[in-house]
Amino acid sequence: MFVVGLTGSIGMGKSTTSGVFRGLGIPVHDADATVHRLYAGAAVGPIGAAFPGVVVDGQVDRTRLGAVVLKDGVAMKRLEAIVHPLVGAAERAFRDRMRAGGHALAVLDIPLLLENGAERRVDAVAVVSAPADVQRQRVLGRPGMTEEKLAAILARQMPDADKRARAHFVIESGYGLEAARRQVAAIIRALAGSRRSH
Image (cartoon, rainbow, N blue to C red; front, side, top):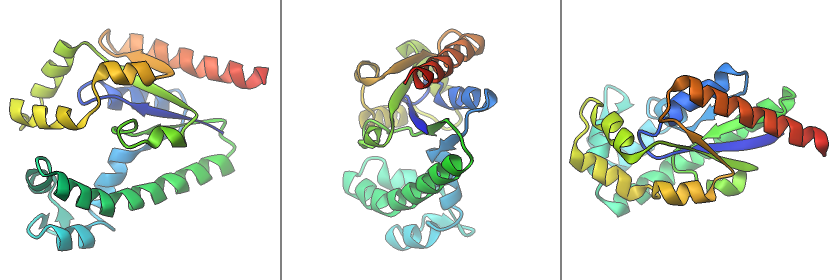
């Protein structure tokens, strides 16, 4: 099974692109969705113990947690030490299911793929990218987003130019959904062709 790692900085259109892969019949493991599930499940106890006050009604409150960890590197490392092994286990289970189901291609949607060294676990890297002004407009249009929050998030993410330089495929999301769909379809065709030629 060939595994593509899909990544892109905040506001670049990665979630939409992930949906395009799904719509074209490619199974996708979404690391962020896994974290959301963990914040209402297996991660609640350990995160509540490590960060008192962030669990509300039996779930991790992402806003409260963000306020604690976003500007504190040590707290962020403590959080990652709890969450990463749980996310890793979910990813391995996904791979096993897809392999057992006979899928030739699968996608791992991982926001910090390159920052965390996760590209070592995939066969190719696809980066979703858009012009910086489009990115800012998209992100600042989100509820509760501020210039300060955006700056803190971008500080943790590798610059877009560096991501593009390390990608096997770049999907330009600034030209609308139909253009992104064409680019994703071309990647799927290219990978199917390369597997046939081996």
